[in-house]
Image 1: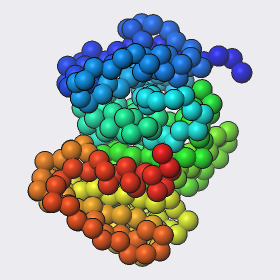
Image 2 (image 1 turned 180 degrees about the vertical axis):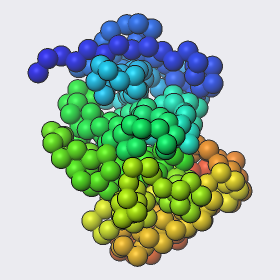
Image 3 (image 1 turned 180 degrees about the horizontal axis):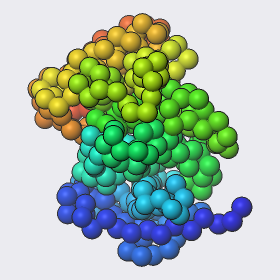
Image 4 (image 1 turned 90 degrees about the vertical axis):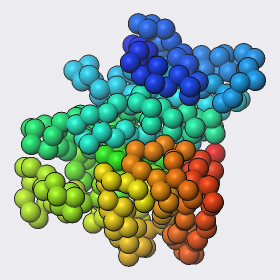
Length: 332
């Protein structure tokens, strides 16, 4: 196979916003790097002495083309520290923005990606087709793009040092919806599916952060170009079954953008379908949070390995409980 060369550009707009996350770029603006050398380049950086300043830095390869030369959307790869491995689990993160805006390197995306990367996961944060529902070519291309990000990771698992059987998908708000669609609907016959794809877009776990699960309930109407009978295919709550991967839902009680009832309904649908799931309600958390939400506490319910689970925390931070979910579903 021909070597894949990547044009890597630092995102100048987001750099100032994410500077406190201590994310460093593995290539200078305009540099061309062969993906096969990416992991070695990351290892060289991590071998340097770290400062005592916390959090420890993370490093990424930015603006990698994954949808073909004709597409402007790109993805970023975050490499974890530690010894070189060929079997690390990976997480694909999908940004929010109401399906019409947002970016893979926005603060929330970068913050979640950095947290997961520091825990040992290879993280891929992707862009996708943006635009209103009424714009031709947006739906279901946005879902297809996210599926193709998973396929890209699986196709380049060797170069990335990833176990292709241990991939999760996560996202916030609109990205939460897209993550659910990637994880719960069929990657060949579902919206944005590709029956001719050489790589599977199936994942082993889904993290839905305050995602939309039913447009009609949110007053946004129907997905254009589809019949009433086809609408259910675009609602994650109607796509779950017992064969689906485990789902973690995170939602705040002070969310004024996506009603928490959406996540309540998603959790009920997962329970009815006997899909393994965990639902964490963060008291006082607003919309658009990372794994360090503002809030008071959280409560967790769900079904794990056939058993009811319930736990609480008097702190709102979600890092530990999210990492525990990933460790159970895709390892570490």
